[in-house]
Amino acid sequence: MTHKSIILYFSGAFLALVACTMISSCSSTTTTPPTTTQSKVTPKAGSTFTYTKHEKDSSSGKPAVTSDSIVVATVVSSGIFYHGKDSVVTLYDDFDTLRYRVESNNDVSVYKPTFGSNGYTFNNPTPWLTLSFGAKNPDAQLFSYDTTITVQGQSEKLVVTGTAHYIGIDEIDTGASHTKLASGNQANIVISIMGTTPLTVNISSTQTYSFDFYTTGCYFHSISNTLFPDVKFIGTTVVPGSTTLTEKFLTSFNLK
Image (cartoon, rainbow, N blue to C red; front, side, top):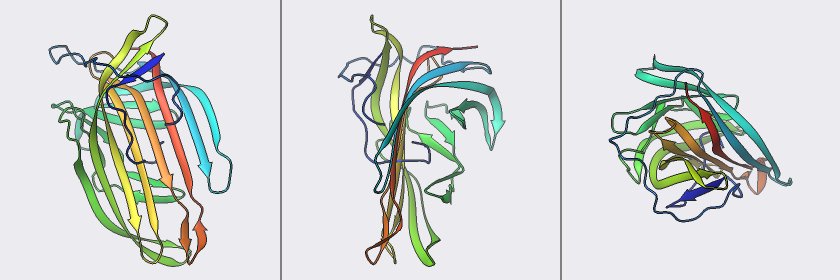
């Protein structure tokens, strides 16, 4: 399997979800997504998507742990109304539930009411986060708000921000013949959690998706990267840091 990308990503990291040494080779390509004259695919209940998954976890002072596995994601419902939006697809994916809706301009909204890392959870003021596949906005502000948490008895003021970024065109080939399996636009959402008083907190996380509207109606490549540096107070670590990096590539699919 070969993964191609016109623009190679990465800029930050998260969403409480989770890339790595590449599982397959990357190279430049002039391939473009299918034209909009084609009919978009909406996967129905029972559709399945099989991914290879590579994961790397590390925590402060400990060796990194890597693993590879196969993940089969299943559509459990399609075209339903959920939390203010219709035509929502619900995917049971890697022990998690992913809900998404394709908007009229080909942006994709993903339902995520909370996010967090290392035991800390934050509410999302806009539960539907929009990936800019259609609008192709390179830097869209999703939200920004202030909050306070308590760390080791210390009250910590934080600023939580969310931004969305269009990246470029992505493609996956499969087999020795390099037959195209899926292609489409790639975009990400970046969540940053920053604090300076009294502790220095700098958590960032990026969730990147590549989406094919005309072949699969689902994402075919995802990267999740969460960076949580050590939180220190007067030179002493009060919360050990960690890094989580996960990448998934579509290898096959079955539409209902």
